[in-house]
Figure 1 (cartoon, rainbow, N blue to C red):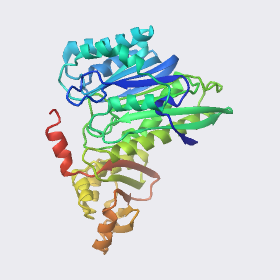
Figure 2: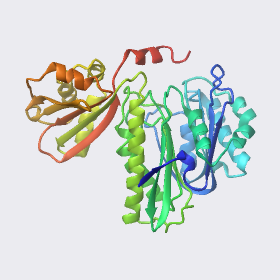
Figure 3: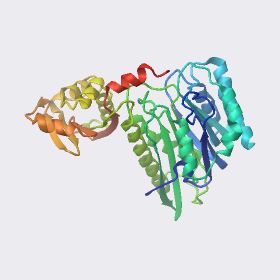
Length: 407
């Protein structure tokens, strides 16, 4: 597997673009994105598990039930959530505008939105700009970059990537873009994520690979414990690579699924690193649990603890907060078998063994925790369960950003 350029336009058959249509009236930053496939694509999606779902989620879930897509239209600056029937009509209108632009079926268009909840979507701004949006499409990195910029909200950096693998002697590409730095927690943590591939693969196996990848990446990210109303992760496969179709879960499927997971893990970590106000990436790895799910729950409990996150921000080796978070995770383990270490590029310090504190250098621990990428490694027994969860520190700036988000 090799890293390549081009984002969602790296795979064959895809174009993308983005423009400013006026939803972000004050900033005039791009706020309307489009990804388009020249041919019908096998498609799959995963959406928020929040009971309060944005109109775009409801429309896209319905359209994806057919397993085929040609386009994704997305806006930022307005979540179109909690907006009643008018919001549903606006989401359907977005799909209709994109469908009419390419003379394709309405059900072949997915819709996504992100931004402020509870504010009516100015659908007229989108309608007036749909031709300009179509004209912005390009089959290169610039087109992908424009689409990515158009879905960003409080993100401070781009989150995209592309890889190339070989299946049946044919080069197969996977490209992706995600946005998200706040309102990020499990049960989908992506906010918005769009993945393209030119692999020939069945809808069923595409869905299976996506769920596997998300389970080991985006659903192991936490920034603030809030699961969004709009979380949307969609993958489209054009089949343009020319590989023998992947219709069974054999060796070819594994090559594809592993590459997809690797790309998703990279992007999930980039979301955690760009958490609102964050200064540090936090990785919590738990080993020795009864099974993988138990290890994941323990790691997530620590990574999402406000006290652990605040200690990481302050470079305070307060390992007791880690064990405390394990204790209320709902996972049964032996606290007297727990070991905890803090690690970074600056070194490693073991601070707890068999559930009790060790003598360690506070100066050395401080040096390790001042790094911008911190690992908390914990063993809780002799089981085979292992999992890593990614998060970030909790800073003053998180409150500043969210204290006046609407303004």
